[in-house]
Amino acid sequence: MLRKNILIWGLLSVMVSACHQTTDSEKIADHQNSQKADRDTSIRQIETDTKFVVKATSGVTMETELGSYAAKHAATPGVKKFGQTMVTDHAKDKAVLTSLATAKHITIPTRTGSDFQKHIDEITAKRA
Image 1 (tube, one colour):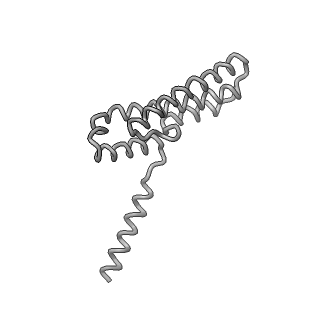
Image 2: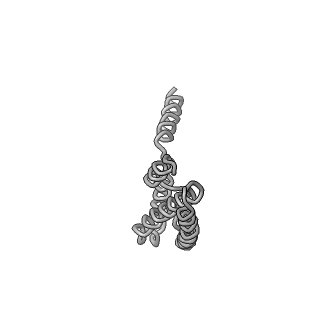
Image 3: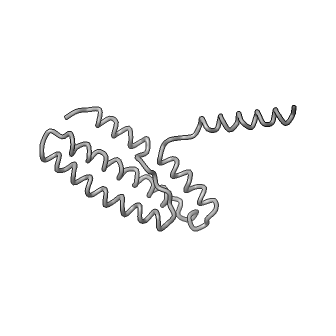
């Protein structure tokens, strides 16, 4: 009986903790980097830098998405061209950040974090 109760409480605690997991790509990357820092002193020394790389990657991703949106939905050719320039330039920035993150064993977000996603949602909700 005691064994059954322990099993039930264990399953409940796993289910509750699963409900509190985040889907924010930035927070996930920060968490993974913190776990690495706990194991690796070289990462622990650059924890501030890892936070910067995570935030910068998320911001670059936002700029790329907004540029793509402008290139597709803008009313004027000039804005469409500017949107494409944003995509091109920020894709290069993301490649540099990705290369740096790989070399330094930093986990970066796979998509825009929730703070930046709010900006994307706000702008894309409006039409030209």
